[in-house]
Image (cartoon, rainbow, N blue to C red; front, top):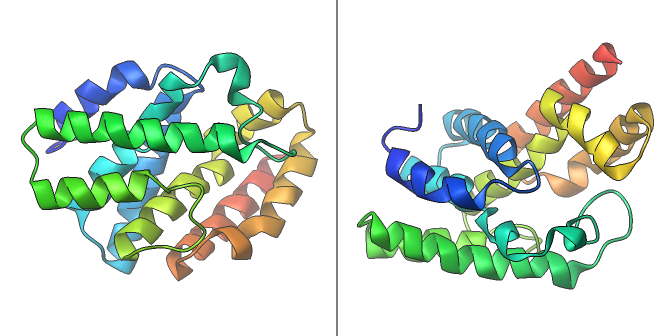
Length: 188
């Protein structure tokens, strides 16, 4: 399923058992594969980055998670912790599996600002950022996020539709978000 990145995936799993991160990562990975097909990019950078991008949430106390992200006002300093800690964990995991030093540097840099950095450093970074945000438009997120944020699903999907052009960086990402948003409206 995650070949050739299965060892990275196995080492990431213990860090993904919070905040629905395992399913989030798997859905984001599927979106990353679509974006790689449509936009280009380097799978050897994008796929490890998407597998590891949220491992840092394990270092943030769970009672702070909902204060750090979501459709309501949130604390960007808490959110930033998961990026910084995640970059450290990702670097350790990638070194442990013997990943190329140059690729490690790029992956760690992407992870270190995947939420807080508004512009992309590269096409690889844009794909990771878009794949991460596309999760929010997925069927899985439409079942999890409204409950998590205590928001009406119809209101939530309408709010998401307003974010597409501001959030997503690639044309393929915007197209996929609109397709997913349409499906979620039909499902309601």
